[in-house]
Length: 126
Image 1 (tube, helix red, strand yellow):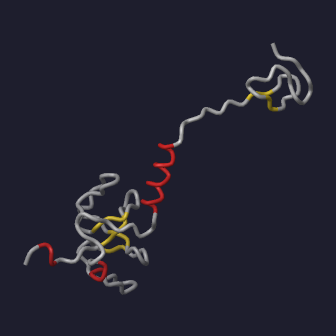
Image 2 (spheres, rainbow, N blue to C red; image 1 turned 60 degrees about the horizontal axis):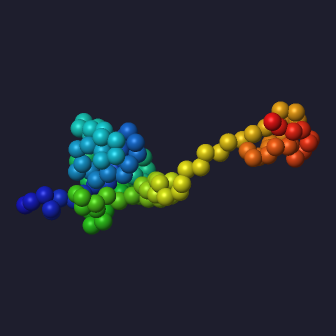
Image 3 (tube, rainbow, N blue to C red; image 1 turned 30 degrees about the vertical axis):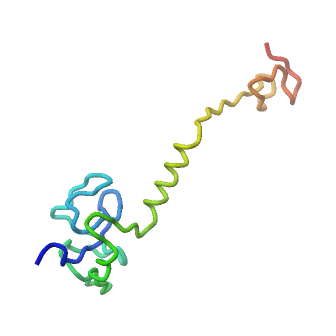
C-alpha cells in the first residue's frame, strides 16, 4: 500500500493561516514547521492532530476532501490566496505614481504642483 492510498487532510497554518495539505511538514507560505503541532479544523476551529481522520467536535470526515487535494495541489478554502495573488498582480501591472500634495502658504488650501497662483485666495508663488 503506497502513499497514494492515504487520504490528504486540509488544515490552516498555525502561523499565517494558509490552507495546506496535512501531509506538508512545513508551510509553503511562511515556512512554519508542523511537527508536534495541532491544527484547527477548517470547519469548526477545534484543535486536532494531523493524523486524525475525523473532527471530534463537528464530526467532519477529512477523508472526504482527499479527492480535491493532492500532495502538490492545495485547496484555498477561504479565498485569501487568490485575493492576494490578484492584488499583487494589480500592483505589479500599475505604474507607481508618487502623489505629492501642495498647500497654499497663505490660506492652507490644496494647490497644484504647476500652479503659480492659489486658485482659492489668489496668492502668488515664486
